[in-house]
Image (tube, rainbow, N blue to C red; front, side):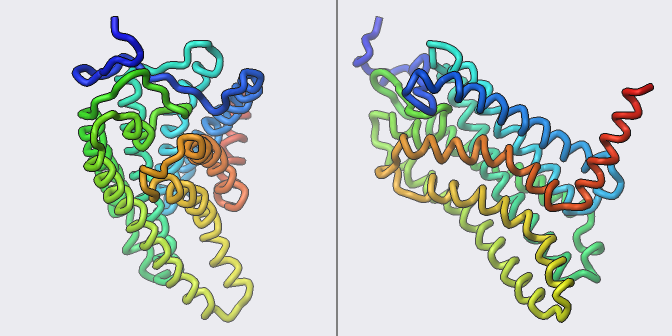
Length: 318
């Protein structure tokens, strides 16, 4: 039997202890209810967006290919973290196995990098729709959109694979306690008792590339969009043009601001206490809000949802 202070230098630890969102026991039941409700809303909202994007002929345009994949990413985000968190919140044994932890941060990292590129592709789509409207259908055809999505998924996977290979080689010493509600690469690296300079540098470079390059493309696209919209003489036309971009801009802000704060800082200054609240925001709150952002501000999606609900109601009455 190894004691808590003995080294796992030769073998990986059997499990990690997750402290959860709060260390106050009386908050566990309210948090369990909030997380469960958020998870159900995220599942229902994102599944609804995916269904209407696939089933409604009016939503078969390029933008909705990206929107459906974004909703699928949000579904995977919440499913990767929330079920484990609900189990731990409702039990006294708040642990996750080493292999489970590895799978969790691998998938989470994969999804995060993929979403960065998907959001950049959506910005490109909005640029073509507003700045090149006559050539929009010709350029942003369905095969191109599918290729962009495939590149996003493949790039995210390759990035995640590099991080996993480097992280699983790290030795861990003593009792493995993560002050978080799920496993994340910066928090796991911080627990290692070896020199993590290579991991720190690789994480910083790859995350900076996958965060800053797509963000630069998004800002550049919206710079051209703003320039084109300001040339429109009609105020109604300007409002309509900005309205087609507003939902995407809100989603970009909700995703990128926490991600930049979380990952683009030195790991030496990483705070697990702050990190878990930032993680809570972009792993639960953002996926829950995204479907409502797209439905409340998009007439086409609202119309498609009404038609879908009408069809379901008619089927139920038969």
